[in-house]
Length: 250
Image (tube, rainbow, N blue to C red; front, side, top):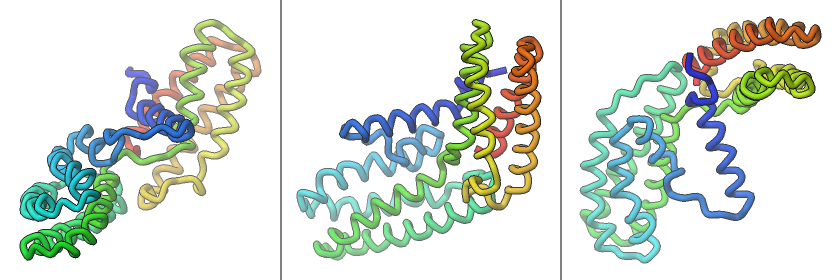
């Protein structure tokens, strides 16, 4: 079974941690971190195509008030939006699907408005609409990305530490400390912390969380008894449950 540390949840957690470090250090986050590029990396090619045209317009033409470039972008935006409008992404949550459809519709209206202003060569209008169009594009793309569930990601990180570092080396201090951390993090995995995107599947999420908690409790019992053989088995079972949870909801 593929280990969670190599799964999409762990990759996402590491990317988020890296972004925090870059921001804290005052570094400039590259354009590749934008939602549209990440959506394209997840297979939503129309967003990548649109972003390829949008990026130079937003980062160069708009701040420099190069109106000919802004006018020329109007029909291109309208053409490329047709591919986004034709997309039929699959969501596990009706809430997320509704949000995507709403934002896509609002974004489409801005594209149409911008294209008309460009056709009329209305400098003030294209300049004023451009920031809204850019934000609408990024917000729509963001709904296609995996659900951000930091409490769940914390559990994954701690379990990986136990399974990949502490158990193989029989590091009891590490096992005891990380198991204590795992139990504490499980307490934060509750109804109050469920992401809004999972509201309509909350019942299933809570049911699966209870299964995870029960397995963590068994793992903790084995830890207290220093039974590393059974603890390793429960750690593998917990890994399986977390992988299924990520597949079903994240």
